Image (tube, rainbow, N blue to C red; front, side, top):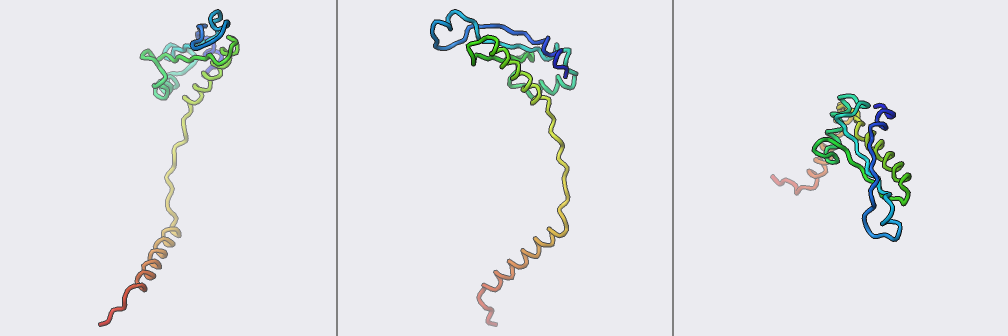
Length: 134
């Protein structure tokens, strides 16, 4: 993953924020919409692209384009910084491959202890029975 290359491939669009607001909201386009086209990216390898498409499938459009919005701040610049930070965190999570779990053997001592405990519990229950009067 080449961060500088990916940064140049990002496209930004400033839009008016939705919702209630005062005098500022009707005049200023402070909301930032980031779009990133995964298949056309030069900063990602083919394996990384397929991994991202599978892991981020719920966040992608039908053309495998990632769209992120940010309208948290009144400043367009701060919103841009926030959405870029979110983008790289999302890529980092999407490209993370967890270690494969190795199956371990159950130690013989643990098996012996379990069987011994079972026998002991069986003996306790056996001693609670009514005596056999034959």
